[in-house]
Length: 320
Image (cartoon, rainbow, N blue to C red; front, side, top):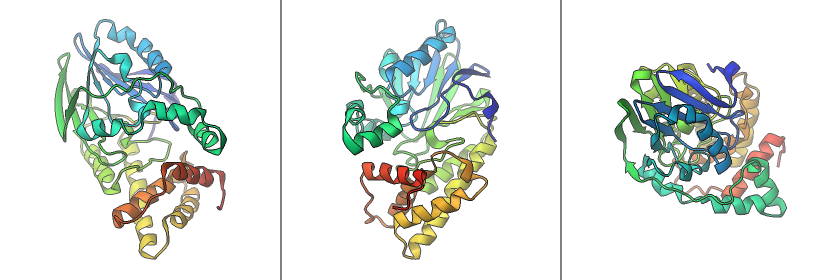
């Protein structure tokens, strides 16, 4: 279940000092962030994909952070749409999992700026996904504190729990739990209204993360992309991941290759009333590759440019 009727850009008050900053439509790069306000101090969950977007968000948060400055920033994972704005809160302690800290340097903003300006087919492909963002002039700002598995924080008298649930979406995914508000900020462990993308895997870890959240005493769920949700939204994402792992495994065992499997599953998903309504369904191409790697460590996944080509082809309805 999602609360898409209130899905508008900007800061949303969740109650009990918790806030969500949402960016419709939640597709590529349009991520969410969060703010937990305590007594004289706040915690920020993630920054955004570029500096102008992050500045706009921080400006809107000033109504709260003027009297409760951001003293802690948590990066839920290493994707740029959740950390490229870190330099704008450089006065805060920046916290992330060890795996996220290691992964963060692998795709520097300068690389995306170069792709954004590239001529020809590769540049056109990149801009079709990320052309709305400004990657020039970003200084990658890494975590100043790292942890593994779990870290308990106190921010302005508020207890906040960081739980590492990766590798799943990326190598070191973290969820941020605010027990006294019954609220969880999931990072990209949840995409609501859009298709999850499993860059790292295994899918079983992601399913386990969903099960962990389903067992928590929580009521408000802030996804990494898409509208606010509840446990119903968590269950839907879990169902998708379970479906993909089951169906891709069956086709792998029957001898199909990954690309044929992805095309077949794209057609199957498109005919469904649940997953078939989600955006970015072409991500099945990446998700199948991840399943195949988990089944066969010798499986060779295409480079990232080819993976984006395949996602674009599926969504364009191309049979090639």
